[in-house]
Length: 155
Image 1 (tube, helix red, strand yellow):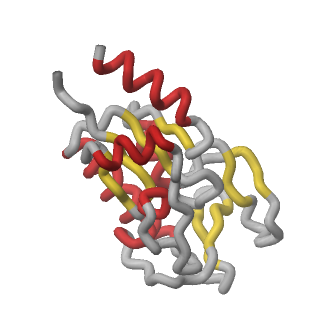
Image 2: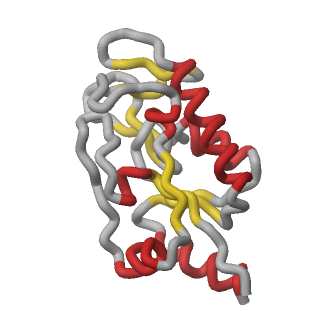
């Protein structure tokens, strides 16, 4: 049986790639098992786009991604989203598990662009690219669904 790969946000994997140089490792036993099995392909669209660690907080504002400094970082986020999609295709991933609320990786909610900690329904740019290409995307709170899909695919 072919062991399918899973695309994951680098910060969930445990890498210090967030805008604040932090990480938010996913410690769910299923995630850790998949990590141990070598299934996880870690990505950080922001880093792929050339942004530094740390970097100014950014949020999606319509079709743009704006930093809290007022800089338009849409180009960097787009480059990162394109590279994330390229890796998903290269590794023929079954699905992705991406960090909720991120301007790149949010799959249900993102911050609303006001930099007031207000969330709104929406997609991060990399997740938008993945979903348009047909990849299922889950967040770190949806591992039950991810596990079910993996079982269906590998049966």
